[in-house]
Each structure stands twice: as C-alpha cells, then as structure tokens.
Image (cartoon, rainbow, N blue to C red; front, side):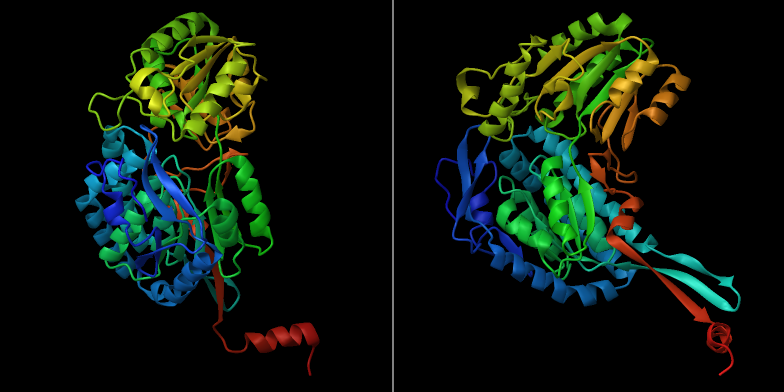
Amino acid sequence: MHNPGNATPDRFPAEERFAEGAQYIAGRLSRGTSGRTHAVVDPASGEEVLRYELAGTADVDRAVAAARAAFPAWAAATPGERSDALHRFAAVLADRAEDFARAESLQCGKPLKLSREFDVPGTIDNTAFFAGAARLLQGQSAGEYSGDHTSYIRREPIGVVGSIAPWNYPLQMAAWKVLPAIAAGNTIVLKPAELTPLTSLLFAQAATDAGIPDGVLNIVTGTGREAGEHLVGHPDVAMTSFTGSTAVGKRVAEIATATVKRLHLELGGKAPFVVFDDADPEAAAHGAVAGALINTGQDCTAATRAYVQRPLYDAFVERTAALMETVRLGDPFAAGTDLGPLISHAQRDRVAGFVDRARAYARVVTGGEAPEGELAKGAYYRPTLIADAAQDSEVVQSEIFGPVLVVLPFDTDDEGIALANDTPYGLAASAWSRDVYRANRATREIKAGCVWVNDHIPIISEMPHGGYKSSGFGKDMSAYSFEEYTQIKHVMFDNTAVAAKDWHRTVFGDR
C-alpha cells in the first residue's frame, strides 16, 4: 500500500483503513499476489488516493477455498439465524454511514449528497429487507399429486457464488449481489472494479463486525482479465453474477458455459424516455434532466433517448437545455455541487468522442465540452443535449455512459413505442402521459425490465431490477432475486411402503 501524499485524508483515510491490503479473505485484509499494483484515483482532481497490490489467480483460489469451507455451516444455519446476522449487519452499516458515503464519493467522484441520500441509505435498506426476507425463503407446501405419494419442494442454496461488480455504483452493486446470495445460505467471492474497491472492502469488514462468519463474504480486487476470468471459470464456483457492459457479459457467459454454471447478468442499457403530447411538459423536462444526469449519466437505467411527440418537441428541447445549463459542476464534497466528474479521464474522452462525432449529423444544443479552469484537472464534462439525430445513429443506438441526452421527435403513439423498442437493450424506460390508458399501453408494449410512468430512476428494495434482450437476464433486489441464488429440489415420499414393488411389477412384470 502507498499513499502518495497528495490525496485528501480528511475526505476518507484510505491509507489507514487498507494498510494491510485490498483483498478481504476469510475475515481479514491481505495483499494481492499478482506482482502488480493499481491506483484508486480521485476523478475530481486526478490525484492518486491509494495504491494497492492487485489480486492474482492464487488469491482467487484462496478466496474460493475460504468460501467453500464456510458454506456447509452457513447453509445449515436456520433462516432466523441468518436473518439475525443481517439485521446486525444493517445496524453496523447505519453506524458507519458517513464513512461509506465519503469513501464512495472519493473513489467515484459522485456528489457527497448523492452518496449520503441515495447510495448509502439504499444499501442499508436493502440489507434490512433481506434480513426480513431470509425468514420467508421457502419451498412449496406438501401435497399428494401421484397416488400414494407425497411431494414437496425444497429451496436450497447453490454453493459458492462468484460475483463481479461495476465501478458506477460500487457499494449498491456489491450489496445487490451479496445480500440475496448470503440470505439464501450461499457464500460469495466478490470482485469489485479495480477503480473502486474501497466501499466493497468496508462492506466486507462491516459484515465480519456484525458477526457474519469468516469466509461467507470475501473480496478479491484484481483485473477482469486475470482475477475476474479465473473466478468465473473456477470449478468450485457454482454460480456467476455479473454487472457490466453487454460486450463483457458475453465473455463472462462464454467462460461460465465451460463449467455449466448458473449465470446472472445485468448488462447495458439505453433507456427511452417517451413523452406523449398530453404530458405535463414542465414535469417531463425536469424528469429528463434528473433521469439523464443521475450519477453523471453513468447509470444503465439513465434516460438517454428522449422521444417527444411533435407538438411538444421544440418546447421540450428548449426547456430541457435551459435546465441543464443551471446544473452546477464542482467538488463532490462541496454542498452546492449538483454534478461530479466522470469516473476517469479516459471515460470523459470516450463520452466527448461520441458527442464530437455527432456534430456531423445532429445538433448539439448545449454542453458538448469539458469545463476549463480548476475543473479541467478532473474528469468533468458538461451536461449535453443533442437534438435531431437519426434513429440509427451512434448516439441513439450505443451506450454512451455519460451526461448526454439525445432528443428525437415522433408523430403517432405507434411510432413512439416502436422507436423506444428499437435498440438491442431493454433494461429500463419511462412513459410520460396524463392519460391512464395511453400510459398503460406504453408499460405493456415497451420491452424493458422496468417502465416508470411520469418519473424516471427511482428503485425500491421490494421490487426487482433486471433487463430484457441484450440487457441481460435475472433479477436483483426483491424476493425475486432468491430465484437466482437458490436451486429447487423435488422430494417425493412413498406413503405405503409398497409403491416401489408396484412400480417394479408395472415395468418388469411379476418376477
């Protein structure tokens, strides 16, 4: 571990917390053994916060072995015992909420108010939800479905789960993967993104301090190509859960297929934002700005394609651009900041490339540049509105993952819904209308895992999150996520002690 001295320990003392390493295996921190290091960088300043040793394949093997050793006892714990442990976990998280918020903002660049009001409370609420849901994990009641036999369903944990979380919501994505898995009796090895491991490590430490046994939750911080691929392909890992791009998701699926693992994929998105001509135009404009710029647009469910029925189109473009121009970029730890930087300068340049290429075929109404002055040191990019692009253009079809909203007009309701469905993705969408029948039709016909009406972006622990089409399959959050992290066993009893003889006679005759 090395702190270069130009980081800001008043924001989060990373060097102190992770002096022993950035791997968390069997209840303790340790150093990675790959022989290479990686830096956590503050994207608001470009300054190095922490340098740590990356995990190698040997670290993955050690973490999987720890999870495998912890599995029998954790799987055998009663639902009440696992529930009690998760309730304690939620309490520890609540006590350390400010630490989590500061670490998340430092490594991601998101405004501290967003971490405090959204990421951390959402994680605590998820933990409390799964603490309760653990006691409701059940099969189906017994019944006689075949003569003198009684059948019932057992719902059982799968084993060791290998999970890979992204850098845009490191804490929440870790929680979404860890909580249903361990509530159901599995053990887990989680690989966070190399850019953002801090809150995943804090999360694992909090689990240990809450009394969750060593080895139930392990963290390996390494590259996707080395640690990630080895984790996915590991023969002792029974399931892989991955959140990230569709392209990488395909590679994960390819590796997992070799060992016939269960697979859970939450992949990219290109969420449509459909505004019908009877919508409240002011609400829609405000919703578009909030939905497009959440987390600096680095959100798979962010509003990225606004389709506006032609009578409202020009006014919507004008009003949305005006609202974007009031958004305040700045230091994530400053109270007045609305929008932080992108995760890295490389990501900023990628976003800028999309916008610069779009100038040849569309109109950049506002934004479209990095700020100058002090903010130029960070990975900042101004909120950007692009109008009049073609449906088949790059900015409409590809996931930009930045503070960019593209607006296109449509004429009929049929056209608006068809355009909304016209990308490979299907993670989330929203429909804006004051007509309940029109809105209901949109929720039915738009192909996405979540469709909001007259809102865009809120999520709740009790409801599932997951996509259609190239946005992946499987659900996070809610009781539905237990479907991902359990397997079903049919148990059948002969109630007469003679059925086997009768079956033998039926098949083979009297012998």
